[in-house]
Image (cartoon, rainbow, N blue to C red; front, side, top):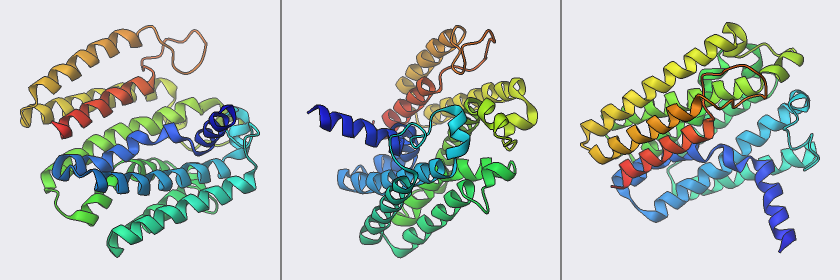
Length: 285
């Protein structure tokens, strides 16, 4: 039993299982809201589960040297060899492709290929958009959020454009914060590795935290507007209570480093849980 638990832990660490569950949620939202079919939801989940496994592992494969400084890469930590990480990522990609080809139209598979190209270009040379320019941010945000909604629309075609646009905006704002947040966590490691590429390295940490707070406010206001428009009053109350708790807690929590700086932004996982639970309740009830 201990060996099984140990294997599962290592597998989830290598594949970064916890990092992209909320990304998958955005593609699932139309299925919850318009179709509510468990089989379709399960199929979609596994397509994007294996695809995000590939995407995160290929990023780790390309980031080994930088992540040695941050001490977070699975290769650096001795969990898996770099060669095996590459092979595992390709295996996950093939599984994702096979499920997509079997259950969905060829045009959905072609869009998945396009997403793969964007993910590869973001992480790996000779493109490596995350290193060369600020262009990497919108690419990463699109692949991690709205792309799932587009894939669902291509596969089923039953989503009204207003709903798709609103959810696309919400997912874009949320994932944008994720990417900037990750950049802040990697700030020191990227500086030491000479990789001056991200938004926080261009405008500085202080301005980045102010931008995160602004994005946070815009996202909550957007969610409030959508919930009121669809007459989800109880969800509005839930989100308001969550926001109040969130605001009080973030005053005393430093999510990045154990130093004396008073950062404006709270632990991102709590924020993600609030958004994810809100949207699930919105689509299910």
